Image 1 (cartoon, rainbow, N blue to C red):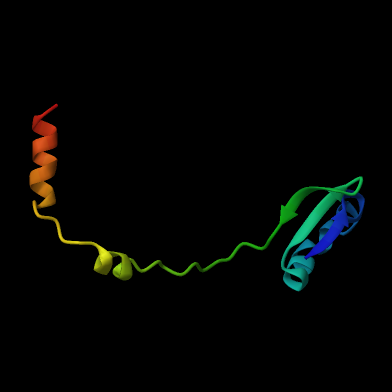
Image 2: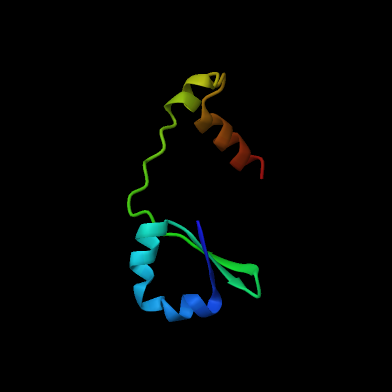
Length: 75
């Protein structure tokens, strides 16, 4: 991760895309203190798989549609 002062960042703004590709993530500082963090946006995020979570869950004793109906009727 590269740290740039706010003045350096302003001077290199036209090269921002190239800097992000090269460095990955940058911290913008002002008077030596971090004020912002820039990171490239990932265009493809993996879809989460909930199969492991579902496998760990115990089956419901009462089906969810009955639980929902009872909740709605109780209001």
